[in-house]
Amino acid sequence: MMASLTSRHVEEFHCEGYTVLLNALSDDELTMLHDEADELSNYMMNEGYDLVRDFGSIVEPLECGYLDPPKSNESYKTNLEAFSKRRDELTPGTARFLTTTAGQWAGNLLYGDAHINWSRRRASQPVYLLNEQYIIKPPKTKAVSEFAWHCDSDYYREVSLQNELTVACWIALDDVNENNGTLLVGPLNDKSADTNANQQIKEIINIPAGSVVFMSSHIHHKSTGNASSRFRRVFMPQYSSRPLLNPQSFLPVALAVPLFPIS
Ligand SMILES: O=C(O)CCC(=O)C(=O)O
Ligand SMILES: [Fe+2]
Image 1 (cartoon, rainbow, N blue to C red):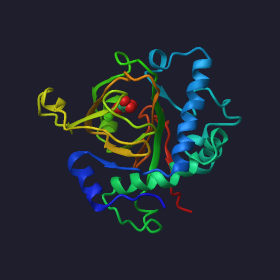
Image 2 (image 1 turned 135 degrees about the vertical axis):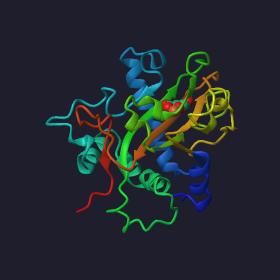
Image 3 (image 1 turned 90 degrees about the vertical axis):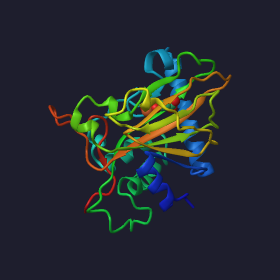
């Protein structure tokens, strides 16, 4: 049984810009993603990379070089079937998690309803997988693996994309706390407020592995570095209600996989 968001979560997400679902993953889902995080980080380190220095602690499963380039084209970025096939080549079961379980959570938050009739919403309330990444903080990297204050929308250079509401599912794959690298959440972006007002800490997230922090693209947050002697792993898929395309090339800025194609 997957954990569900309630009306309280949906309301909190819309008022505060974030909400926490404790123990959201099944044991199998947690093991699958935790193992994949290790598989990919071991690969990167064996290739001679330093996760923090070379990649800012971010590993993108389909872009990190682990899989050979697609044989024909890049349709996996915009086609559900092609995406699922390629994604499951890496780890069977991950596509299902991304396109059903996590996609449904994101849809409920994007459209502000915890009780959506999932089969009827397909046509009128589309959900797109926008991106997926692991954020892996190696042991004893306190000074270098922290993230400074930002909103995830800051990562887009285009103003039209910055205004788009997207949902990040920040999934703890290890217990997280201030010592091994966790989120410090601030207020929703307020362009009229001075910078300091946007940097007030509202909550320090302290959650067990398998729990999820859902964050709006407009919430201010930062994170601590990993001072502990073990790896800290997070998986973070992001979702949008339309494809986010580069305005010049019309190519997806990352992924633009429609989860519920109208057949
Ligand atoms: O996992 C973290 O420490 C924060 C990551 C983050 O905020 C991001 O990747 O945008
Ligand atoms: Fe972020």
